[in-house]
Image: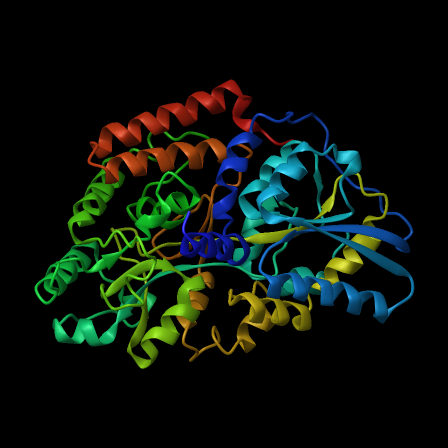
Length: 450
């Protein structure tokens, strides 16, 4: 793996969705199984020492967490937090392999893993332990990721989002008009026409970057291109079934269109296709803004993904914090989470990693994401959350399926996308993936969480 790819995966893991956790995700569904009773931590005295686990990511993120813990411990004398940082590549595997009784009072987790940890009784509902103020200040998109059956099991300090970065200079030279907000997104046909127009002004005809260098049979494949299915009116899972949701004619047609774009795609083997000006458009997320803005300056524009008929869509969700199911001091754990999710700490973390804040107050004040900021598009998208089931034309930010069976969904969709990009028939590939997902869900009683 190149240094560029390592950097990308590290950034994605910490600032967005946990790409590097694709392999651990694939092992989660086989662990344990849901029981018949709800899992609730013990309230405890609200005082004493509590343990906290977090993933070790970028140095700046680690420093932000460590500073928050140090500040919390200094701010009062009733509760002492003992922080343990675990290397990011091992983090999810460590939680998966650890008995619930040995897990900490508070732990961080990558969003898509939450439902599986709830299913395996490793997380407790947090509603009774975090304050009304903290819950009320969480963005709706963040709460969507953390909710199962009306209960919340996690809240994040930051979120994520997708878009298309454009090189204004190259777009203007090709006479391509581009959208200025999520409300006037390109249609899929208009996006294809833009690629063709750009090709006419490009020496090698490669005008688009889709992060091909990171592969599609990975979490990037699901996070980056499930929005195509959602925008076409389909879904990865609907009513506990993939057949009739993932493989609809509209979803098949949409991925056939994506397949047709391959002729315009720079393989981006050096990770710099857009930054070096080889392509005019890059299909990626918020985390590339620092690199792209430094390279392009005022020529950088931020655009929504194209609309395949059901409105433009984006993925969302990231790392979150929750309370261990066997905590004996959930009251103290909730007090620490309240502190961790205050404006000071959320701002420090999102300054460190560049991600959109997952609290309303910090998001509104963010120099990057506030109204008029250079990344307002991502904020606007997150302000229109769909959750993971009611994916209609008016919402934009979709939560990846909140189910303990998510590892199977992402693995099978990624495989299908990879084969489609390689030339396979979209209908056959999506139907095969849907059947495999449904068989797995049938074998595991639908991964029902009591």
